[in-house]
Length: 253
Image (cartoon, rainbow, N blue to C red; front, side, top):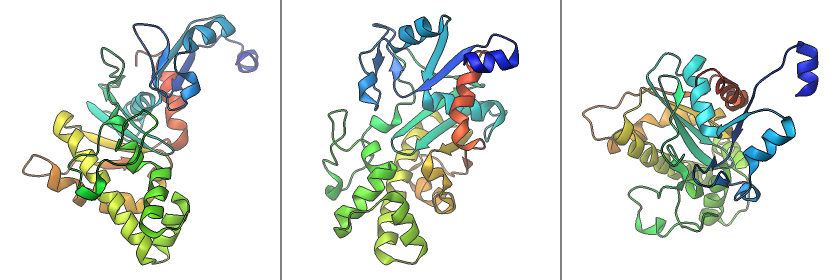
């Protein structure tokens, strides 16, 4: 940071996109899947180390802000941004500003249970949060690989499952179809609550175009409406979107 300031010749502001959130009660980190952060005074430590105020926001909220300001949801009032990567989360931007909520948990989609679970989906995989069947345990990249292993007995990675899908492997197709079905149910649950103007998907799985081509038909049956045509788009700014949103925290976002 100091090197960048020296090169620019001006003092900068610091915004951080982070997993979890800062508790408004204790000032400590909570709900981070980077569990070593939980219970720590991360904001205070950073401010002290950098000798200036630091603004921190959930990384999915930062994604939503970035995409609402000048990304895939630019100019739209309600932007719901999903992260599908090593973890699962989401953030909401209203008129380009992050919706954090009273307890800083607005958009904590990944730790809701899978909607309408089938008998073979109960109680669901164990989650680090102590519950079973959280959406994160079904929809992350590692969860895709774990589900494939349960189906086939083959230990692999999410990337390998997608490669096998493209190679025409029937077992990979079955795993991917199950993934899309669960993703569709999970998305519809939030659409029924906030009716967003656009759904932006980031994270590693946003680079799988097959998700976008097949997903609308998996969402629509579960939406409480006469039609479902909400745009679903990959994040315009890719892996840089979250850090861009963190920078926007100092611009009224």
